[in-house]
Picture (cartoon, rainbow over the protein chains, first blue to last red):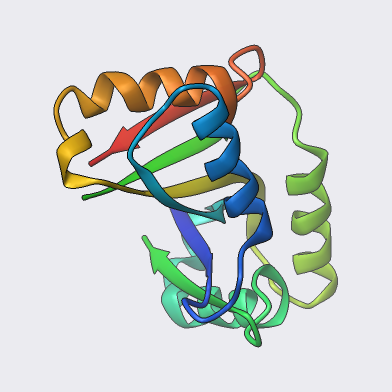
Length: 78
Length: 78
């Protein structure tokens, strides 16, 4: 089975990378871009035998390794 | 309006970052993880006036700046 973990900076955390992308889009002539936020998507292939309780295990993985819970939120889609 | 661009390595491109995450999950005791691929998600806030033809413009943005089309695929969700 497959699962995806989306990791995004918390709304109150500044995103210098996203700001750099926003400015670069402006320089390239793309108008009307108000803001850009950059996050991660992590695609995980799991043994089917591991499917039981997988959401809870993925949340543990995200909390311990995939995201930094101080500054990032995560969302799990299975 | 808001749009999200998902950027993933092409399937044939090796992902050393994803492999490092897979090994680290194993060391942390998470079993059954077959593979991990790491990509980016880019959330873009656009002026509502910019909504017309936005998918085509986002595809241009992705092609020119957000993704490296040699090694990455992108998907646009509005």
